[in-house]
Image (tube, rainbow, N blue to C red; front, side, top):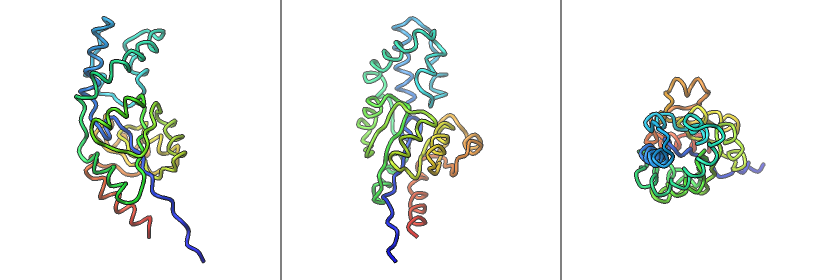
Amino acid sequence: MASMVQHPLTVGFDLDMTLIDSRPGIAAAFRVLSAETGVPIDEELVVSRLGPPLETELAHWFPAEQVAAVGDRYRQLYPDHAIAPSTALPGARESVDGVRALGGRAIVVTAKYEPNAKLHLAHLGIEPDTVIGSLWAEAKGEALREHAARVYVGDHVGDVRGARAAGALSVAVTTGPCDERELRTAGADVVLADLTEFPAWLAAFAAERAA
């Protein structure tokens, strides 16, 4: 009897506060936006709650009818102000490379505007196979299903919801705004302190899958 053929393992990653610490860059971009518009914005508060789409955050500071236009302007400002200050989180490159080392595919599925997400990754030398932007929470599940992702790694309860919507294993890290209790309550299957723990977890997961 022929053995069942297994497809290459596809692992999805969130971007902000999962792979990268974008807080310094986002704070810088919001400072410029605040100066341009004359609207006071508490950038420390902004970066304490990263995860949801940009428009969700802008709605705290601007009237509803201005949010779309201000969002467009923010995305224009972003490359010049937010890319250079942002850093890779510990274990990020090793985690993406670890998927590749196992013959798998690593994809990034993020709420961030896709061109800016790609700029971050290129600047930091993190090289996923595919980047899909402008998706949040359950909508992330659409891209994860399309790419047959078995695992989705994120830092926010919205990422857990995205994994569950796709029928993927939810691996959560506590490097973002959500703590372990919040992530487990949302349905995370695995919670790690950060991505330095991920390559070993992935190797064990892949071995179990192969068996």
